[in-house]
Image 1 (cartoon, rainbow, N blue to C red):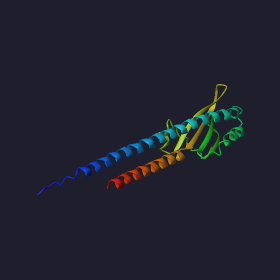
Image 2: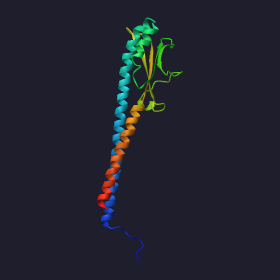
Image 3: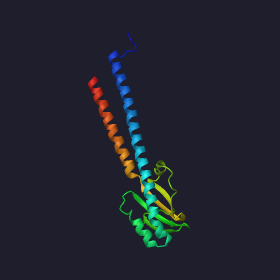
Image 4: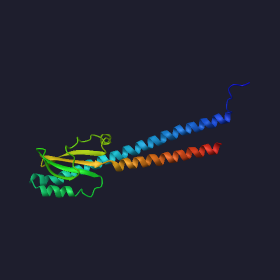
Length: 175
């Protein structure tokens, strides 16, 4: 009497191929999601850096003239941005001159990289406001990362669905 029954060679080959395919598809899905996530994060970092630079230049004349209305008008140019959570302009003494949105108190530390923003879902930036090289204050802003995270989740779901379908079709074709 045989104690251990070995599967036929064809069965072992099919299982081996399906296992290799499953591993490779998992690596492929993981890598594509990683690449897309990092590129979206890089785009967000670049866009917020450029936007804060422009906004700092825009609020500088109002801050130099101590004209709160001019500073607030400049901030309101961002009011239509869906991903802007808050913006605040501080004078050189750190007092808030103007704010837009839900400005946290106290203001959070600026995020160095996108990964830091995952803790609270907001990418916080700080930009010095200068006019003719003279420091006038600081622009602080927070941008929601919800859209980037949603795109990453959607990509992961779509890629996983495609990989699972392909794996299921491979199994069905070999059975």
